[in-house]
Image (cartoon, rainbow, N blue to C red; front, top):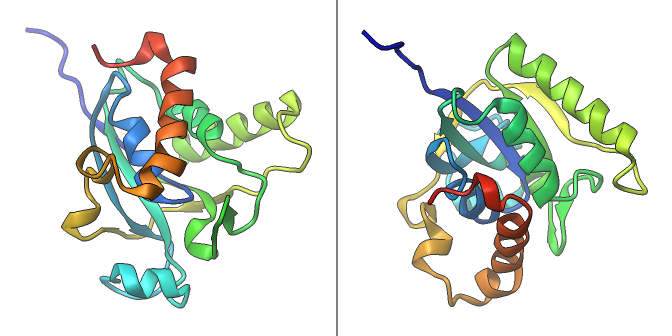
Length: 182
């Protein structure tokens, strides 16, 4: 009998969840990506509530991945490539706590890996400012409304997708060509 493999979860916030989802769905070893909300105080928040900034949630993606194909560390390297982890509560023109950079870890191993990767990227001095990515245990993940799922794939001509999402996806494809799903 072959070795049984177990999928793992990663929950990441790096600005608008449409951008992160569009990238991670193309990464080999990623089985599923769900846009949603984490890190807030309101149960079952709506997009409108999260956008108000009053719930404390961040827009996140929850990535189901096969660690035999892509590691949590690999996911974090992609994460730090596709967003600016030095801007507090902001990504580009998206401003508010819902757009913060955050890693919501699922266990102590993920927490330790996240600390190591942040230290590594800090030593590399990729940015002029310090990394402000929040590290917090995942308490509850709430999937976003259905129309947010696969948003870029379903709305490629939408102006935000053309101006913001598409360039991030193109940068990712160029940098991680060897790790793309075929």
